[in-house]
Image 1: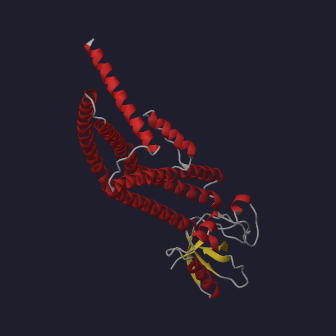
Image 2: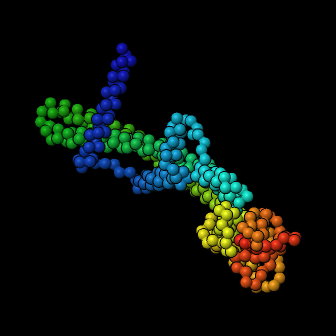
Image 3: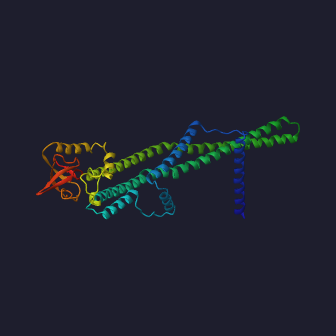
Length: 387
C-alpha cells in the first residue's frame, strides 16, 4: 500500500511538472510570459551542432548513393542490417559485365581477334569490379561508419541533453512566473491592510514569496548545471570536425587508389589491344583488300585516353609512316592471331616476331610480312613495331 501511495504521489508530481511546463511553453508562444534566453556562445554551439548534423546526414546519403547506385541493393542491405544478418554476396556491375564479355569471347573463340579482345576486356572489367569492392569496403569502414556513429551516438546524446536543458529552462521560467505572481499578490494584500484577516493574508503571501524564491534558486541552479553539461558536449563538435576531417582524408585516399588502379588496368588493356582492328574478318569470313571501317571497343578506349601522357598513338602511326616512306624493313611483334583471307595474305600467330616492309602501291593499312620462306600481306593494326 505504501508503494502504491508513493507511485501515485510520484505520478501526480510528474504530471504537475509536465502541466507547469506546458503552461509556460504556451504562454511564451502567446507572448504572455517571459523566457530565459541562452547565452550567445551556447546558442552558437547549438546552431553549429544542428548544422553539422544536417550536412553529415546529406553527405552520408549521397556517399551511399555513390558507393551503391542501385537503390534496390541499398534497401536490401538496409533490411539485412536491421535483421543483423549478412547480405548475400553478388557480382557488382563491372564484374557482371566482365563475366559476360569473357563468356562471349569464349563463345566466339579465343583464337579470333574479337573473341580474344572480349576476354581481355572482360578480365579487366572483373579487376575493376574487385577494386570497386575494395573502395566500398574501405570507404564504409574509414568514412561512412564514423559519420553514422556521430549521428547515432554523439548527436543523440546532444539531443537528449538539449531537451533536458529546455525542460530545466521551462521549470526555471515557471518558477520565476510564480514568484512574480506571489510578489504581486503580496503587494495587493499590503495595500488592503485594514483588518486582521488581511494581516494573515499578508503572512500567507509572504510565505508563498519565500517558497517561490527558494524554488527559483533551485531551478536556477539545475538550469545552470544542465547548461554547463550541454555546453561541454557541444564544444566536442570541434573534435568531431577534426575526426571527420581525418575520415575525409582517408576517403579521398581510397578514391585516389581506386581511380589509379582503374587507370592502370585500362592502360594495360589498351596496350594489349594496341590499335585494335576495325574489321573482324576472321569472325565473318569477309575478304577485301582493306579493313571495313567500323567503331571498335579499342578505338573508343584509344580516343578516351588520347591525352594520357604515357600513351602516344602518334608515335605508333609515325613509325609505320616512316617505314612506308623508306625502302627498309623492320621487325614487328604480332599482337593477335590473324587468319589469312586469301593466298595473298599471311596468317599470323600472337606474340611471334616477323619482318615487315612496304611495297609501292600497297594500301596504307597493310604491309608485306615475311616469316622464313613465307610472305604475304599483313594488316598493320595487328602489329607492333620493335626498335
